[in-house]
Length: 292
Image 1: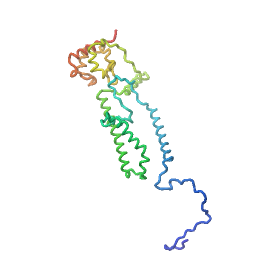
Image 2: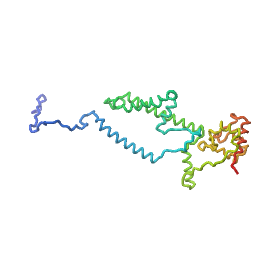
Image 3: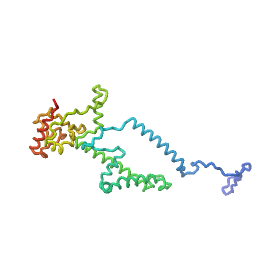
Image 4: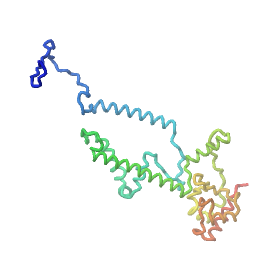
């Protein structure tokens, strides 16, 4: 034991003889991880259990959102509707756009659908085993950080390109998405006091003179918008051609077919059909009237 205030005096620590040294089996209770600065806790089961709990909370929140905001549903699938623009759910938009590129489509479709997604998901699965470094600051992990930033940029870019292309196609074809039409109908029904959506079926009006040669022109030029059954396409604002003779005279039909209507909703056919073909088609359309 030191006495006085001399700096060069030897310091001797004296133990307490009353404290007995522990004998027998070593302590089996592992110390807390806070006793080891710079160390992290065990991945299995401590860290994994925390991740599972976070996943459960996120899953419950996601389920609540799906119940509160149901997915927008369109009309029943119609294989004859050539104007329908298919769109996947938002979380697959980037893959939807990715598969449009030629180097992952056609002869390379397996690469786009299995190869590249398999590498991406496999890297996420093996990340805890491949990246065993102790450094956690992102700027000191350039490879991992660069790959993550590149992935996020790719996801945002592909999603935006896909959505912009979809909006462009809707505007180009003057198409209103089906779930928007249903919302509009429901809103109109609620405002009119009907209390809900009422989807009225298309009236069954027979086609007059179905064997007329004008039908061949209609099949080549008109069914893409007005549908093969000529009952129209509401999402494209294309009216039914059945019974059109009750609402338009032949002169009006000639004007519509020749010069178009609705700011491009009905295109002009004066450059695609001859005067004789326009007369043939409009004569047949004028005969399409409801049975008396």
